[in-house]
Length: 489
Ligand code: ATP
Ligand code: MG
Ligand code: MG
Ligand code: MG
Image (tube, rainbow, N blue to C red; front, side, top):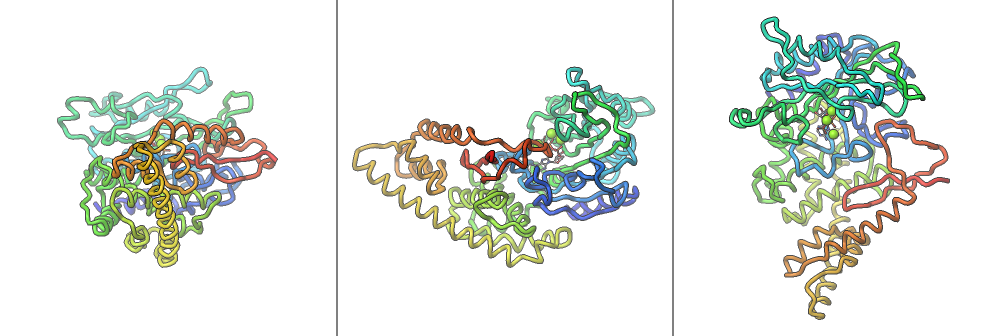
C-alpha cells in the first residue's frame, strides 16, 4: 500500500462513518497566543471543546500538518538520531464533538488497523489509564472493558495485551483547569519473530524502542477540572484522536524506519544524488545527516508555504534555526558546501501536490527563500571558518593543541558556528577543543537568560499575566534549543 493509499483509506474509512473531512489548518497557529505552531490535530478545534464555537459537524476527520519543535512538545533533538520522531509530521485524526464516545472510537481504531490496513492483531498493544488517587482521577474502567471485548477471542474477553498507563502517558489535560480525560494509546511491535520470542513486546511499550512504537492516541474528554482541583463530568463528552501518519506507513509497509517508507524515499534519493553517497539507514553521522535533511526540508518548506519566512524573531527564527541545522549537518557530514536544501523542494512539492497543494502552488517562491537563506548561512560558516583558521594558526605558534572553551563559545555565539563543527575541524588539524570549558560558558549564558525567561508551557496553558508581558524573542540556549523569553513590562 503506498502512503497515498494509506492516507486515502483513513479519510474514506471515517467518511464512511459519517465524518466530515476537513482541510489541515496551517502549520503556524493563528489567533492563539499560547501556541506558536500547530502541534496536534486538535489545536484547530480547541474552541469547540471549550464551548466557544460550533463545529461544522459533530464528527470530523482530517490529516493535520504538525510541528513539534517548541514548548511542551519539542522533538527536535531526537530527529535524525531516532527513526520515528519528526519535526513536521502528519497527524491523522477523527473527532467527536459531543457525539460518539469510547465504544465507537476504540472499535473503529481496531477495525481500521486490522481489517483495512491488515496489521497483525497479535502485534498490537493498547494502554488504558490506571487512575491516580492523589490527583482525584479514576481508573478508566470503561476503556478497559471495551478493549477486553475487542481483543477477546472466541467470545472470551482478553486483557493480555492491555497495559495500564500512568498520568504522564495516559491522561490529557488542557491546563491546570478545564477539559481533561483519560487516553488510550495503541502501540505496534514491528520486530522479527526471533526478537519477539526473546522479549515480549508488552515489556517494550513506551521504552523508546524503534520497532515498538506508539501509533495512535485516543483521548476522551470527559471531565472538567475545577479551580479547587476537583473533577466534574462534562455535560458533553468528546473524542480526540491522533495517529502518526509516517509511523503508520512504516508499520503497513513493513519497514524498519519512517525514513524507509515512500514518504521519504524520493527526498532521500535526491540527497544521495547531491552528496554522491548512499543512504545506509545506519547510525553513522552521514546517515543521521540524511535523515535530518529529509525531515527538516519538510518542516521548513511547509512553514514557508504557510506564510512564514525565516527571520530573527518568533516563529520565523525557529524556522531559520531548523533550516540552519539541516545545512550544517549537510556541510559537516555530507560535504554539501553549496546550497542544496533548495534543490529538494520540487520533489517534495510534487509528492504532496494532491494533499497539501499549497506547497506546489508556491514552489518557486519557497525554493528561492530557502536558497537565499542557504547562501547567507554558508557565508557565515565561511566567516567562522576564517576566524577558526586564525585561531588555529595562533595556537600552533604558541605550541598549544587545545582550543579554549571560551573561544569555542564565542565562535558559536557570535558567528553561529556550532561547537561540534569546531570540534570536527579541530580534529582534522590535529587539535582538540576544551569541551568542559565550552559547556561551562554555555551554562553561564543559560543561567543569564533563565533569570528573566519563562519557558513556554504545554499545549494551551494560559500564560499568566499574558497581557502584562512583552515578547522579546527566542534565546539560543544550546546549539539547537530555544527558550521562549517573555519580559515583564
Ligand atoms: P511519542 O510518545 O512517541 O513521543 P506522543 O505520545 O508524544 O508520541 P501524541 O501527542 O499522543 O504523541 O500524538 C499522537 C500521535 O502522533 C502519536 O501516537 C504518534 O504516532 C504521532 N507522533 C507524535 N509525535 C511525533 C513526532 N515527533 N513525529 C512523528 N509522529 C509523531
Ligand atoms: Mg512525544
Ligand atoms: Mg507517547
Ligand atoms: Mg501519545
